[in-house]
Image (cartoon, rainbow, N blue to C red; front, side, top):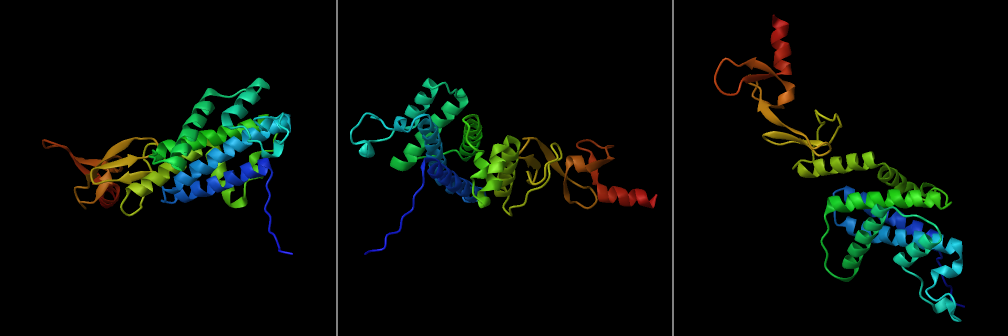
Length: 258
């Protein structure tokens, strides 16, 4: 008798399995592999559809079939995302309009990826995936399911926790963008918002990818090293044009001699 290997997942297990894979691809993409966002989109879209179908099945398991009256139920097609959402609406569930728009966007991009050429805005992908995961997590809780975090694989929990916190997601994205925009992958603190690893110093300006503020880069009149303007002190403004500025190191040195 031939040995057969089997792998089985129920509806919710299948949804969480796709969530885990989506989180892994998202983490990979944040590590400077942006093509991995493509697979994060596919997996998160699959997760969302299966999650709503699971909640439909919890109302009655026959409702996930397009023809629940079929005599050959096992061979019947199951409902899609929008069928599931409408059934749940009819059952008294409510959906935020932002979530519905995000799901429409996600489904459209998924279809383009699966069937044709596609183009995606990385920042839009990250923001939308974050909103979808926050909304579906909240929906799971209000539907009586256990918190999804308890089902997320250990290696995915940090990423999931970050995405559930909008501030942390924005901060993580800013740090990723700052590191990617510097030729040497170096990112600095921001003088305005105070966050670390979110600012890049160009030749003439320091730019923060988190709060969006920027400031001029100037050179110390003594050591000729470049500093942010906020890190320099006035040294001489008795001549036309921009005043001379001095860095903190030289200011402390000079004042220490007096």
